[in-house]
Image (cartoon, rainbow, N blue to C red; front, side, top):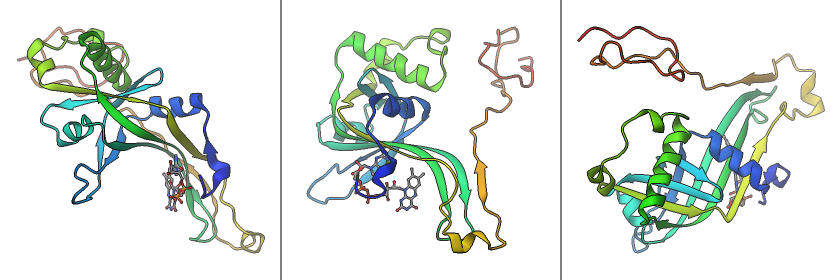
Length: 212
Ligand SMILES: Cc1cc2nc3c(=O)[nH]c(=O)nc-3n(C[C@H](O)[C@H](O)[C@H](O)COP(=O)(O)OP(=O)(O)OC[C@H]3O[C@@H](n4cnc5c(N)ncnc54)[C@H](O)[C@@H]3O)c2cc1C
């Protein structure tokens, strides 16, 4: 890391923690080296040890391209705060991000595929996998699962106030940190939810299901 290397983190636990907190990642790749057009596609991920799992429709161009084991770059970003400085120049964000370089491999083993899908589902909402209908053979046939070994990865973190130069500190412009949080809203039951369906503990309080 050349730019602001003091913000670089190569600690495995720190990288894993960022991956585990982020709800989505962005996957960068060049599907066709002849035209060289890069794509960066947002998608859901899950981590099991040193393996990152991606999944999706067998029709996905991204997954078909990555299954050919072309180079990829997976990025996750968590934005923690707006950092206001006296000058526009020193305005910034507090963040934690991770970048993984590597190649994906198609997961073909039936047990690992199911485990990967559970890991991805549990990443989105812990406890949900055991609470919903498992995938059918047909659904599994329509699903590609890829694994990426997390071997070449970096994290970058920024924390704290803006680095205003001393000459700016006396200026009458407000400076400080505005923290940002992802918030869970009140749940909205499916309009066709059967009356009497138990509401799991992880569903936040919201309106009651209508009678159908
Ligand atoms: C939310 C957010 C907002 C940002 N806004 C800006 C901005 O407006 N302008 C700006 O210049 N930079 C911004 N950055 C920092 C940016 O991500 C780069 O780190 C920085 O621009 C240096 O890029 P570079 O190509 O010179 O990195 P280099 O230092 O050359 O990177 C070398 C390698 O380090 C790794 N690396 C680089 N950046 C990151 C990272 N963020 N996380 C993990 N690994 C990394 C990659 O593997 C990369 O190939 C932001 C970062 C975040 C997370």
